[in-house]
Length: 87
Length: 269
Image (cartoon, rainbow over all chains, first blue to last red; front, top):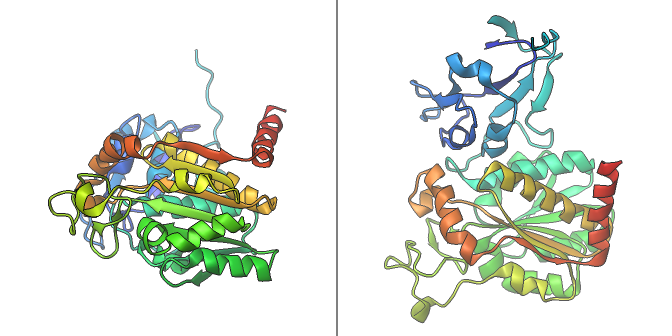
């Protein structure tokens, strides 16, 4: 799976086929980067997905993963490229 | 913006715990059981007791726990989980049995078992998930149902004149001398979930240090039987359940407090 991300920023991966669309992650995300998908998954629910335009705002707080009742969310931080110092 | 693929080089901030099987939960959307199951699996991983932990499941929504946990589990008769855990602990003192019970199981049919397990001061851990209804059977009134709350068996709201008052289990059991650690926590927001994890971890450590009975009550939403959306159910929990069931630690004996204090000193260093 390929996700849009920037170096040294966190990103969220959601297993959409197991998501039950309870929206708890959407309600707790401080940056509101998670939203509901426009499709229905194999279980018949509308899963949560990361909104691509906002994906770079993820702070890696893991609030969504902590609240997810179905453990479908995992959070990573991209460390491969050192970040540029803020000028 | 550059596109990268997921690599092992990335730092994992959060991932599914190893002690949780790769098997989807059967719970309804937004159910708090999933959160508590995951927390227990994380704690078992962190304490490195996967080979010794034994989950004693009760009857209710938590009944399928043997599908989810990647360690030993045992199914008990309705409400009798503390008795089964007692037997496991007495016969195999090196194991770490814990019971996972709902409010219909622990506070209704299993009241005698939990009260006497606490009175004997058995060295076991109990996770008590309180969602104020009988979830699996369709939302009937449980002993913990709030006054005035609707359920399928109290269609006009629970009336004290007919069906009495809700039981505050933690307050009741903290008066018994055998209990070492009794706490009530909730899962209504990420901060509360983190506190829940700390409380459950301390309960397990109480057992590992042979200090006595530890019980953690977790207030959890049941969106389907409360007839609310998952997010609204959490708001309802905060508004109605927290005043009736105040959060906090009701009993922490000195030895457990020392365990807790030791943690803080370690983290400071």
